[in-house]
Image 1: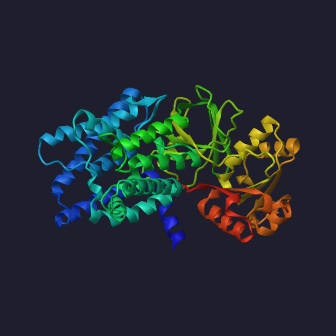
Image 2: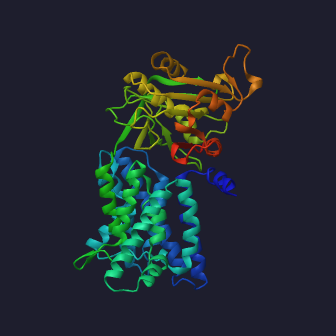
Image 3: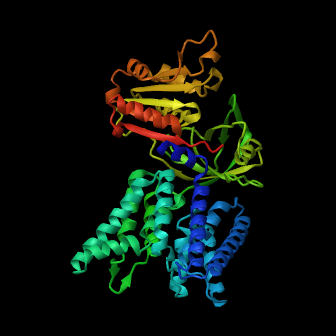
Length: 508
């Protein structure tokens, strides 16, 4: 059942799934309003949603043209839908002005309240915070209505599973509940009632599932994300106040965004493909090498979000996450990408890039990096294009002349799928790093092939890394491969704490 759910979730991009979830909540709210279960005019709710989408889309398109950057249509819809779920549906024509300004402010914040081309605040949160301060119009967070909670919960759990941000969301929930319980107890209030109200009468669930998981404003690494969730949870607690000033949920998010900005890099690069640096690696694999306008500081193995504006994007959108295959020691940024026969419009447009085309790279993040302890033994297991973070790590070790005990297992269907072999051969010669190549399609193995055949097995791991129980394992490749290997390693006696995973859902 879990695998079936994961396979279903992996068929849609992260942003598209969020949009579907939010649109589904709107649709359910309209039905409940028709049934008089929610106290709203269903037509007013539909009109408010459509009005916010229209205002947000127009504003975002205008600012994108002025600032000459690709318009992120998906994030526009997502922000508009969030606003429709947290501000009351209009009850008269005067509300149009306020609701319209909220949509304008949300979109404008991405461009005006930005540093280094990267927006700092959650657009929906900063918009309603500004209107609360200057127009005395606060968000009602009506999505927290009791009848909506089951739908918020079920969809939210699926969303967080897709985003793989369960730890951060859990830290938010725990922090918010513990803070509320402690402050209620100190004030002599009914603790049981406080918990019940937090779960059923506050926007706790929606906030945790949707608001704090906004990817462009969260910290880049897991440890910082836990702190981010805990701090925002503390501020979210309705009992937290300074004198007579109480912190609203949207202000809690804005303050959390400030923390995120202070502790993490916010870099955004507009990159141009230069001098025929699109390299055909073989079969359906291509290497794209970009020359950035300024040096990017990152750790080997980290990823970035790539936005490519193009006409008529399909349902998979105009954004992707790609791991940097380049090393911080190199002057360029390199990404290795697989182009299947049913490639998305994003990948088709990327393959058609020329020297005048540009792509935006932002949101540097990821914990799939080398351990700080250089004596830690490492086993890397890659499937297909999942080799890209290992190319980054090993190229870095070669360039820095840094010796580490590393064994790399690299599985491909056929020999023409093997990429970056020059880097791994150099690592073997200079640092003694061992790479085991294996071809899973035995019928396509050439007669001269002297590597391994078949899938990577426990026996192969035991043979090439006999002290595997003391190793830190890195798994990178398709979701099914990563999940399967994790289960295999656990059966071999490897602790889950010794396994780091990098998933490639495969939005072609």
